[in-house]
Length: 279
Image (cartoon, rainbow, N blue to C red; front, side, top):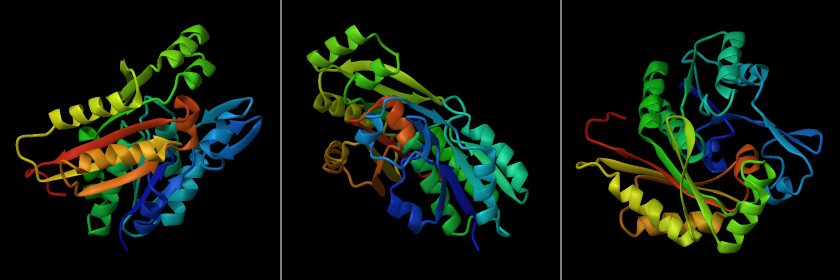
């Protein structure tokens, strides 16, 4: 037996990776035109065509069921979306108590690709024999180092959700303005916008280059997207022309993140492993 890993669907994990590492995923919930569905139930464009759309964190009961299903002698590690962005972490803590057994719940203070990198690192450590405490420590260290920078495909969903006025959104889309963001200290922070996706990708890659430590042991990256796989593929391909990552994957946004950011989002999450790390 090994330590079991559970996360929520805000982590942009490829389905093949979930299966390979036996990662349990608790879905964030969506209410689409009055009907509650899991956030992977509809493709992004169909989701945004709904008349009304809202999101809700998984219930404590959903986390309790996921923990019970995977509970074994080595315990369960639950890794959640940032507590500053969702109540998923609080629900996971309550669910772990309800399920009893040996469980650690960690707030990754991240989302999407950066959360996925922390989940992946912990799952690999567990597969390789790490204890529950050791796997949790790996997740915390990776989550603290992982960085995510992305670009939106349009301003449409920000207008729809009331985050910006409709007049400003229409004007921005006509001019080709692409809002950029990063995830820092558990929060989503706005960056200066770019004129198009290509220039945004150049800025993302420049930030990735600047973040490189003097001595590197390995590079771990995740290209993420919401209904824009070719943009994520292009971003990852541009990176791999400069160096070969030790971990590299492409992950799609779940429906809850699509509901916030819209379609056309692309971005890059990464963390640098140094010689001091013993992962």
